[in-house]
Length: 308
Image (cartoon, rainbow, N blue to C red; front, top):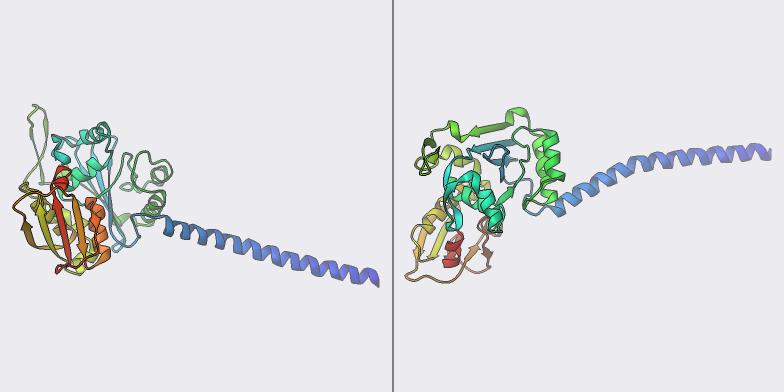
């Protein structure tokens, strides 16, 4: 009798252990996945997974890629700029072929920011994220995407942001992934450059058919009215800044030009804190919390002009 009770006890214990083990097997993956997404959400620095985001990178061919991720439309659009395109380098470094800008950034110890600024100013493609290595987004190649996520080389894009970008691209359908080669468009023209070699030059103003990919949904929907206070003392800076802001979807309604230059950089004041942060990140400005009669007020001085 005692033996029968003992056997029944061990049978119940075994059954209970199996249930506990099954429960543990079920709960562990849920916990791991939850922790992973919490890690992504808290670790991302520049992309919330909802707004558009763009990055510029160097291709092995010497061409420059600019990729825009659009979660609203679930689209990935890549614009290819031929490496032999002549551009005005930001920070007043002169006129060179765009394929040489990466090395110039290295030589000047400022990295890829020189490329992102140069692309923004010449093509009106607002971006501040850069990578020396192609992320593989235009091909949707999983191996290239994983290589970019885990072995990115020199970049200002954080690991969590790279993971989030990679996951987004891998979930975009083939029809949502497109590439536009500017060499095949009418916005670049091939001609003999000052060095005697054939290359491309920008013809007129970049069309809205290209800049529309970079519009910020929040700025466009809220019809953000912008004032620029220009104390740079240099002609043309506020005009170029205004063009880039209007690509984002803002509306420059006022430009206040000071009679004398002020030795200051850039300050952004905005009624919408989120929009103010976006603009400040793009132009490496400070955000100040004070009153303004405009939706967005941007004050620029001579130090800003030196690096613009």
